[in-house]
Image 1 (cartoon, rainbow, N blue to C red):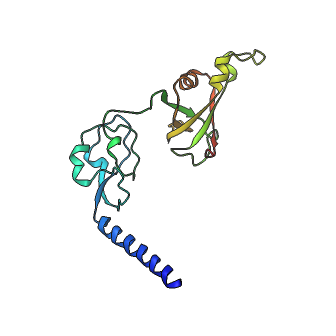
Image 2: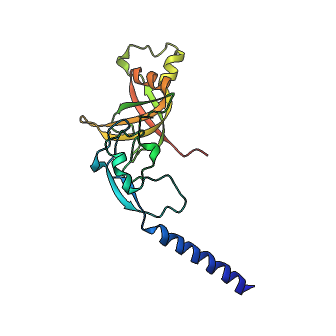
Image 3: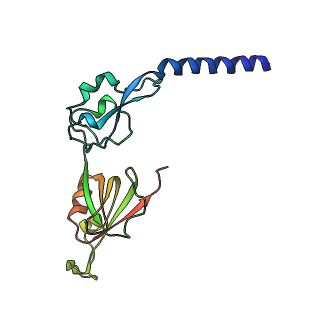
Length: 193
């Protein structure tokens, strides 16, 4: 029984190594610099990497570089990611029904280490100078504008301090948040279960 088990393990390891060696020499295109959706991909935006692709993913082979350079990124391309054909072509970003907005967030009102892909809740707190009385009841639109869930697309430091955070969210909520007066705070959410 032990000999049979060892034979099975040895066979699996042998086939695994043979398959990896067969695919080890394959070269594919990877993203060398971040490229926003809709922007034309330059030669310096892509690089060639060696990876094993035994699962048959739709990765773009290095010899297809000419098909990529000069075309637009269909979605935002992140540094280090491998390119697939669906990422190149007419802009498909943001997805239908979604919008991308940038919000200025004061220092101390954004979680430290916030990065692309994080889920957040956007809270817009009215400032005292917006003319809204503290005793007036909120309307449906102001309640919607005060809270919305989004995904972080990117972050950067603002010139006057604080941060500029680019967010992807529902189109209507994006318009409500973008037009809401007040200070923005972001609350990072954990992964969905």
